[in-house]
Length: 309
Image (cartoon, rainbow, N blue to C red; front, side):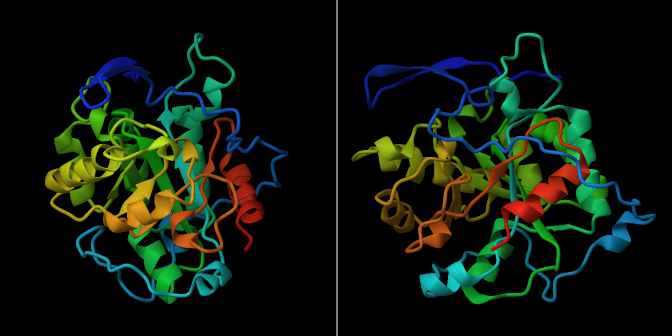
């Protein structure tokens, strides 16, 4: 399998070397403890003889991902906060461990066999994948979702997300959201523009993860143009569809970022596992990073305990 490599980027706007950009092997800041550690596996249950039969159908058929521009919600925040949370999973690298991987790095790597088992566990338990567009309609207007809904998301844009995970998701009829940092597009070991277009055409969702994974809490002035406006336009040109969903790098956010995202056409944003902001729940939607080593049963068990209300 191809590996995501580090590469250095110089930015004319800042006039300095950002340094080694590690998109698929970066380490979370110590303050962001978002990886759930494996616990005891729940009792095994008999797998369904027919996985497809376990999938519920939405009451209302959703349009293809990203084909319709969504208008910002005017729903009271308290009403959105009162809705039951939908489990949202975050993945980065799906590949086998290497001897050089540190213990902390392995928290963000899921071996291929483990990822396949986790996805099968979801399917066997009757889960149906939804996309950000469907989640948004549910949160903002109460649109009905399948009884067992889950969202699968990938950050950064490693090429393995096309070469490996796509092939695992397809037989299960699972769709996912891919949050892309555009500095990596067409770079070695990252997805190419035509692969992003293909994912979008196949019904997956393409969202924004900034230009170069720079911490949103540090943005000033023209940073919002460099990190949000221009990358958003680039992804829209690639896919031919609106890009209205955003994932914060490192899961880090602050309240000052929310009006900036709103003014640039983002209708919702995804963090990691910190509490939602009661005043702006659509811009602080929770996700959990899934570690390697979990079985499908463990994943389902943690989803149930981690997204209760």
